[in-house]
Image 1 (cartoon, rainbow, N blue to C red):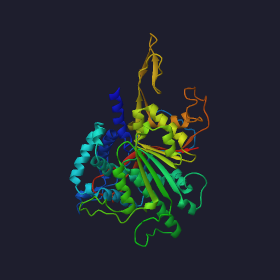
Image 2 (tube, one colour):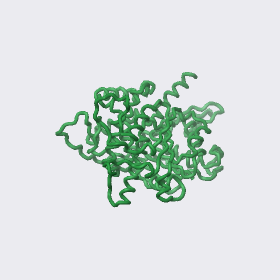
Image 3 (tube, one colour):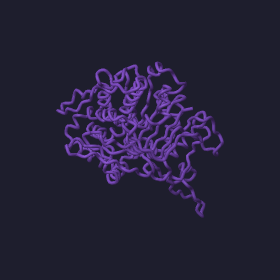
Image 4 (cartoon, rainbow, N blue to C red):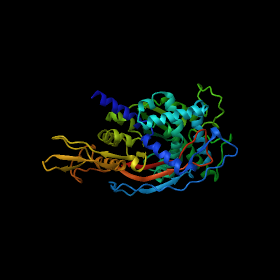
Length: 467
């Protein structure tokens, strides 16, 4: 039994590092390179004056939606496949990448070694050897350098292009629309469950910068840089973020370097590389961004601890995390979502991003013993002798999520009514689903530069608002 518990802990490690289903993602990554070779960002480590600009790619048709209906009855914005990259200003996109180049300049100074480390890391992830994959600071940095930059851009594109998120930001995080001064002074709290690799932190910093640029453009009629020629937002310009990151792996060093790069534009004092990669000043002021890291397994977090952490949150994110949580334990993940329902206040947004299609499906196939009930989702068939046989059935992550938030959570405590017939014991609705996309592409612009190659990203997106 002790050994089984240890294995569960190791499995959970990848759930909370900010990029789940990595073994599946590497397969997806290989498919992308084969189908869309032009979608790889320019690798400046081997740049040549004669290098040609990557060709634009053709769109890829999203896989068909699994034949299981969602339980949502609310009117929501929904699409099967979107392609986004043009919504982000080129300068801001490049500065987001420069944040990572600045924060990890010491690693990027030796690209050959970094690429070798990334290949080793991919092998560990493919074999689900998470103990070795995230055993030290170098492995964590290699992961952040390789996968977090494009995710940060993808998340930023998501936040700036979805109407319900933009409305939420202009309202200041719930409630009535406030005036400009009050909105600018507001501090919003975000809890990132599984955001240790830093993509969410950088994306939210970029979001403040984007909002600032939009307000300046609205006031002046055109984009104008500050007097020093840099896009640096003022501390009181568009509000601030208090970001709490919860992750099982020790990401504090990675997050510290990224926060430093975002708020100062300087390389860490410990960096002794001769790299000339630096940013053009900070992206946001230190007053605009406060990052707190908590190293913990969220599946083992108590209800009261979660409540204290989230009761003032304006937004909670589960970015490439939820599917692995479900893969580890459906009951524990369901409890986490129900505890979260009881913890957050009215108007809080829950943003769930994960791998699309079959990459985020779970197979339920638990054997039933005498007097015990089968696991939720298993299909039972009676044999001639009266015994029961459990057959496998695949459920999309989206269906489990909708079932939990839009049905199971619809009681005062989140526990009453479960186990009853559908329609019985249901209470007041707790969440409304305001946006859903089965497949969304974020495609990198060919003009962007980064020391190593990056690929486009594909995701499913589901956004809920607490009622």
